[in-house]
Length: 593
Image (cartoon, rainbow, N blue to C red):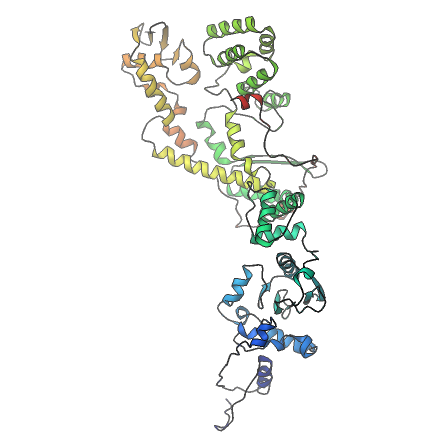
């Protein structure tokens, strides 16, 4: 180690470049230095000129004149590189964190010396956002892969920014920033080339507001006006909101491209999941089917009713009938009585006839059905012929050949559509992820609710039976044999078979839940009503139905190359003219209700 004489005078170094030059004299020596760093304060003249001085932000004491190459003359390439190394942000020079002021500036639209951007394109985008937010524009001075300088577009204005890379890296660091304009506001704001929907979309998304489904273009326009004084007409605000949403959820085109990989990761995380992705001859998306393994494995514990619904397809559409015949040849098909009622309300007039149709569709006994149909025929012959042509086996409960339980409408599918209405416009992968997340929550919530139940039957069935028990106490029971019983009310007489779990009222037969007559007969026989209900309504079945889990996609392992390279292009969709419609047009029945 080299030691200097004790009487060696102190060396005053004005900036880091001078200090680096001093150290080069000892580049082959090992020395020990005692250093005292004095930070320069901002002078009034610098503040007046709007100069952002580096020594306010860095402990190396570099002055603003070291960065202003226009004032000090053009530097050589060695000096440029040397200066870049000196002006690295603290994080890059071994400091534990970025200076607080720089970190704060990165969270706002403003620029600041020391800001770091991953690429030149990212820095250029930030400059455009800054220009729009501050109602100005700029011209590019120098632009190379490693350097970018811009000035206010108004001649003579001192506003400027300089950023460059360091070494072989791609990151751009803001080296010089003169933040005050010396031009008139009316002059510099008269040009706004950067206010494109893409830049406004980034500005809105990052610094203004959210992009949820409740946000409208008018909200975006009002928010930009109040925050930055930017006036945006409706259709431009619509494009701004659309682009901002794409920044959050991704574009539709990219989503279709990512679909094969997403489905692969979902199936890897949920073994046994059934997935079918079909594309046409041009590799454009055709259709997709997804059934999670949790739903498949627990389906035996559910009532065997599948509700089919779709956009622009009614429940009686021919394509649905053909598909059911092909996929489920042993299944019986019914139609949604709600949609049937809507069609009747539109085609036929008469409140009395409409009331009779509703009763005929839901009645349990054939004799009651025949009486109602005779009344409909007398009221409206055309309506009667329409109902006969619609096939009574598909819309009437009493004529349905198989088990329909208490399902007469497609409300299950309608409820799901309502829940997903806010995300239907999302790109396909985002939409599927929202559905997956929804199922994950539902399975967890219902599994927990089933495990917390203290009754043998499910909560809804227990409540229904408690109401029927009160009515059963008013009925008289006469034993016929070991299994049959006659149950008599004020104006009714029914026969209950406790072994076959049937009753002449047909409620016990169809719903698989003890009717009031079956409860009276069971009470007389001292038989628990719990054993009369179908196992589908037991708490144990409900718990088993939601025992599985729906896992998020597995991103821990890479996707095989043959899957990642699979092509899936967006389908061709004709964009209708006018404002895009989000809400469904209500029918006359819905408005009346």
